Image 1 (cartoon, rainbow, N blue to C red):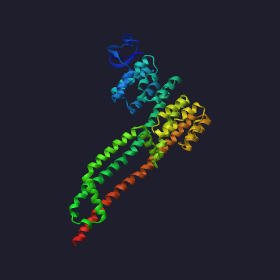
Image 2: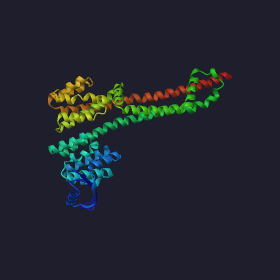
Image 3: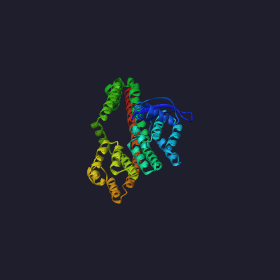
Image 4: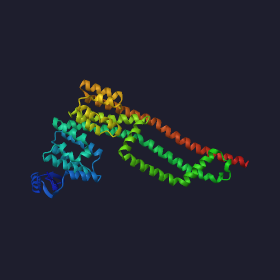
Length: 403
């Protein structure tokens, strides 16, 4: 059925923008007037077009906006407001144009008789399959507000884990940049100041001093070449990582890293387990829950290993057996899955597995930082100390010759 976008004035005198589904322009106009709206503009174009336009223009709501909307909607529904009234309140509270557009679109669809999960279908790329299926399970069970509360908890946990990892990497990244810049400044600007002092000594200079001066000359003469090479290498690696084979190879190498590999593995499995457990606890079928949970995994190697689960479950095989046959997953993952299957509480065991791995990720990140920060500081200090010692050795050699 065609969609029509409109601009109208509501009974409260406020201007509304939204879309409506109707058999024709005249029918759409009648439906809107029946809702007490005074039409200002009505033209062909629907929610799907609006969603696509918003996404491609970079104006789609972000994670924080989705979390805030979900939390506020859960509170309003728990307070006893009907869904359409709750959406109107959210529209009045919306601070960003893209959120206002989305909520108006949802309100129009809900007033037209659609369920909230159906109204969100055009925005699937923004909200995700997991979010929409959770809403559908809440609508089917009649506990939409409780499901929204669980969605809020899920989104907050996901944000907390992501923020923990990102914030943990900020300081080492800054430290690494400062270390590189310090060494470049020492070699490119400080050491050349002493070259006039050493230029008459030739081979009489200590080997360490000669090596440092040669490095400084190279940085001074060919630094721009190194910069271009570094930028070119970065562009090449980015293009290579964008290919299927490149991304898979990169993800495999990330898993093979001594300390970070285990953290990445636990982080990805935690996302899978939390998603599957949350969906199962809300009545979503095992096969559908697994398929949606697999889509939340970013690491290609782990994702490909998990792809064995849907056909195995269809064939009547246990998840724990299929996971063990891949050779990818740790005994903890396999055993906790097996216990959940045998006890009939797979959803709870998946959530417990997610909690355990979340704790492991946080402690692993802390351990990694405890090792990485002193390594970077000591490495930078060692290189700068070598440069200073080389200069001092050269100065002492000059003094010896003068004597």
